[in-house]
Image (cartoon, rainbow, N blue to C red; front, side, top):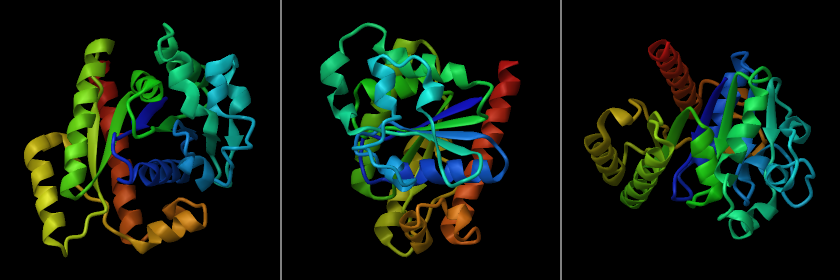
Length: 259
């Protein structure tokens, strides 16, 4: 089982889009996949037709006494793809229990129960450093950082990488990281320059591809479907298919090195 956290401390960079479409392609390829929505705004939850204000089976309950994560999982309309939904109550979590010992490992311990049930688990993180992002980074085998190809988003990436370094020190382990350029428009000078800066600064951490601007990604969102189930030959679909293959290949390489 591979656990992937999708995170950035800046909103609007394509986190949920990336989580949804990685999960969609993995499920389409026959992998049992779970998406976990750790953001109180619940964009991922809404994507699959659930309401964070009313859904009873949600990730918040893991932090408030439910010990069997399997009882909190819901299905989606996509075969082999399930969801552990968000709750608007997550916004209170840091104030409630941020200082309590052991709360940074709740998600890791819960997801271990699912090792025989899923091939991949993808966690969509909130855009703030708090107990939920700490939980995701402590649980994950790999971090995917979507970054919009514009200068302000690159500044936000600096904060994310600083956070990652702090958490790696705390966990005393490496977290393999893939930076994914998103919303790329090669027709604009600003987009081209931002991509060059990103590759120059972060080198091999940056995925070799890009996720371009693509209206099919927006249409897929309106229809509550991963783009693979809307138009698998669109620019966005081809990009996320390539990213999925890259992640799978990276996981295979990591497993061989660990062995």
